[in-house]
Amino acid sequence: MSDPFLIGDAMTGGYGKGPDILHGCTIAAEKGEIAVIVGPNGAGKSTAMKAVFGMLNVNSGSVRLDGEDITRLTPQERVVKGMGFVPQTSNIFTSMTVEENLEMGAFIRRDDFRDTMTQIYDLFPILKEKRNQAAGELSGGQRQQVAVGRALMTKPKVLMLDEPTAGVSPIVMDELFDRIIEVARTGIPILMVEQNARQALEIADKAYVLVQGRNAHTGTGKELLADEEVRRSFLGG
Ligand SMILES: Nc1ncnc2c1ncn2[C@@H]1O[C@H](COP(=O)(O)OP(=O)(O)OP(=O)(O)O)[C@@H](O)[C@H]1O
Ligand SMILES: [Mg+2]
Image 1: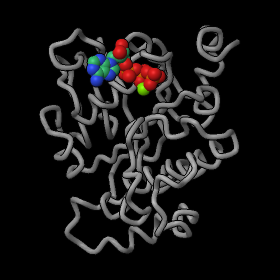
Image 2 (image 1 turned 90 degrees about the horizontal axis):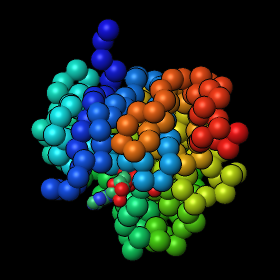
Image 3 (image 1 turned 135 degrees about the vertical axis):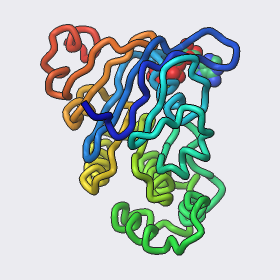
Image 4 (image 1 turned 180 degrees about the horizontal axis):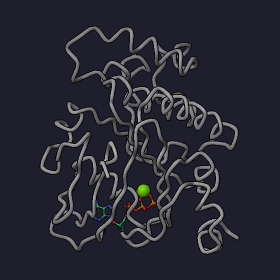
């Protein structure tokens, strides 16, 4: 079987010299698909994302992008290879304007990025309206759009999002999910951590439940939504 487009395969590792947080954890994303990672607080979801992005050492296992082993690359080198990452916290520059945030996102590019900015403003029209406002003045949902837009400025081949709908209302969550689906349809695979498990599984082509740094359940979103054990333990029945 051929590799998924992006895979963190059997990753074991933790922070610095601390104990292992991940114990053989695997997460992956296929072309044109949305992969969702859910699980309880402290399960290691963010840690798994950071491991895929190269922010912690994996003692064993590997990370492969488009068939290439990138396990030893720095995060910046991974961005150059085509990874876009929106971390769970501190994902925008609050004192800079919306447009400056997007420009910062293009830091690795030497070409003209105005077309990309236009595409991002088409995807998130509110950002165009507020382009000269400090990002810190925006609502939670709008800030998340800035963060996703900033990551898209590098024209990534794969987009990783850690809780893109954290702290937003259900309506704004639905809107953000619609935009994320739109991005996936352009061919950019999405690897996304979500605390809104039920809604996330509904849009997930592939889904992972992580518990204590391990894969507890894996399947399509539909399969996990129908799984008695997953429903009882993670979806409130
Ligand atoms: N920078 C860090 N240094 C040391 N330990 C950390 C660090 N970040 C997280 N941890 C530990 O790693 C474990 C997993 O945390 P992680 O943030 O990956 O969980 P999570 O599944 O993303 O949780 P949440 O749903 O709350 O975002 C926890 O025990 C946490 O205390
Ligand atoms: Mg987290």
